[in-house]
Image (tube, rainbow, N blue to C red; front, side):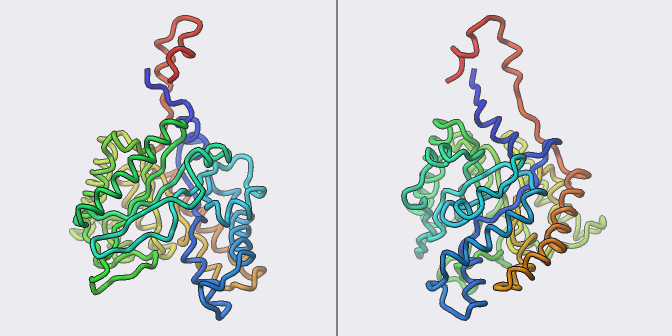
Length: 346
């Protein structure tokens, strides 16, 4: 029997009581660094540890109660706010370094220095999150590197029996007109690249337990879900993405990619119609409130009003239209004698 009780329990911890994933991301590093730098009037390289941790602690203090889980990075968020994470809220920890290598053939990912799946497990996390920049038309050596990177982490997550949350993002090549290394949604992204990326990493060899996916079409441009031809055409891309996840038996959630709260609610309308199990979003929930930095009191007030309200709206939509994830303990039914579980558990 292929029992993965650690993975199953971790996913349970990340979901709410109904089996929906209503998760908040605060592992963002370049977006917050750039925000702090702009507000302080300094270079990004001059942003201090204290400012980064102050922002992340505030996000946990205000949004933690309403989240089924929170996504933290180990460099800033974890030391800043682990003590503020509510007991009922799950913990997902980031593995990948935001300082990827950008080559002419595509982006190369790597893990944070001195960090590993084992350390994430030992730190008490319920899940490991990895962002892999990926586009199927990248150079062959880049594709090989990215696939090996994702696969090797999947192997480690199996070894330590912890859920593997894989985030996939299509990106512009360095020589393209729209090239940027910022964490923004590419307005010219091709939906087939998004779907082909999901199809690749839905293969069992990668060991993904939960997908964190971008919208196949730019979230800011989605038409109203009104039954029009434009709506039906856009919905088909989401449906195809959902079908890939459903066929692989992998639950999936949506990321917000920096769109506005109303735009992200519309993204989630499309995603839930296609079978999504929730969201793992950051800036759509808290970005607007953080524009008051360095006035943390003003940030807190806006978070308590706008951020909490957006999270509540997303939660209500999820309960109404989202697809619940259910843990599978069916293997227990086949056990009839003392010791079978101990012998079967690999």
